[in-house]
Length: 375
Image (cartoon, rainbow, N blue to C red; front, top):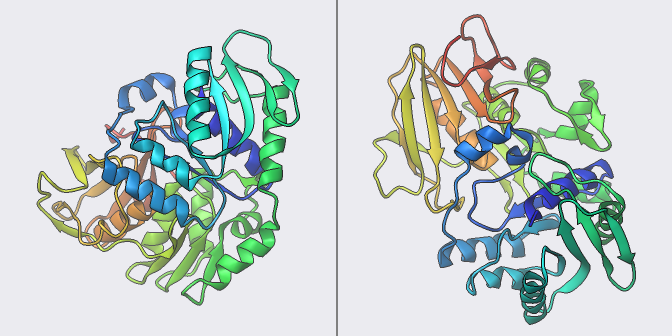
């Protein structure tokens, strides 16, 4: 109960401390940070569950094993026996349960896979939060883990401190190592870019807003290969991908290292494609909502995937729960045919799209438009 909310709260608290890491949601669910940030009525409408197939578990385990940064792995609800394999790629565990039966079941799973237990916590919506033990384990009650709320309190603070110690390393050294491996001459460190442009920070986390996008596009060179390193919204990555077009964008992925956007092709999407699309025509643009039926699309499998071929001359609005590298690939494949491109953000001021390229009704990059109307 509350595992995803705890994950969301924990990763934000760690970012404020400057502990570089990423979250991998190792279960077939439509959730992400957006599910805690968007209007909860909208979340309930568009959230979608999937099936954790054996092939999907294989990919998750491979990505965890190949991590380039520390990962927080959110396993969601109780895994199937096959999904338990994910634990074998992990090193530590935080136990969060709501009752004794669930506690016993999860404790047995942790023991079976030899994980080091960091904390044993009971989730309760209405009880007072308290720490009952700190050594050798953190034990206590953590309260109020409801979607749309960020955790706070003594138990949560103690947990954050414990995970931060586990992730302790020199972030500057790690960043330098990653940047030195970039396969391109010009590399952009997103955090350094944010400080140069005066983007506000919450702790060590840059708070990117769409209105910062024009300054980004003015500052960066266009039409040359670029490397992009760091954490930023998908609309910023999409905008830089369009800026570099037709040259290559390289981006750092914490699971894969340095990668290029996948090469996508325009055409009729077959029903068995690993990437499906729902195309809706509006007066002045096409809205294309993408979905991954298997809930997980391998980067290498995405190479050569077909995406809808849209008549040229109209804007394109992209949407869907997709990795950043797929948004950059989609932006580049539509770059030559669409006069403007926008990326839908369900958490953006009631659910709007951010224009990342071109002009629409007098609006340019960084401005918002409604996803269902030009007005």
